[in-house]
Image: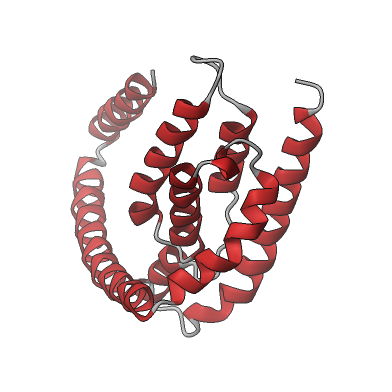
Length: 191
């Protein structure tokens, strides 16, 4: 459906531009927009490579392992069934750790693995378990210690202080995670 909407907007925009004599402005906007998009993407890729490298160093230095050790006792309280299975809990810990460092692209394989492991433990196949729903909420509202994607976008757009959003990001994502977990735990009693 969205494809039809976009097509209609573009098609109608070009038709209106032709009839109003503004075709040259539309062409110029397309060229300028394409140019700025390519520059933005190249800048973003460079910064993302830097942050991925920093996170790789954090992984090799043991920082992510330390964070995983801190998370394990908390997650054993939150996840009833998955806490009993080391494979499921390990995948959950790795996913949330990667998300905390803002590496959602690196967290995705661990998230898929965590869901597969929790599905293996699920007694009602085809229906999401409470642990699966809680994991989705934590995955979506994960606490961001280093919001690398936002930092990268701000830096590539020329922000004078790209890191100014770190503390607000930690606060807002922490509140989102707490509210999400609280809602899940309340709803688990009724459904």
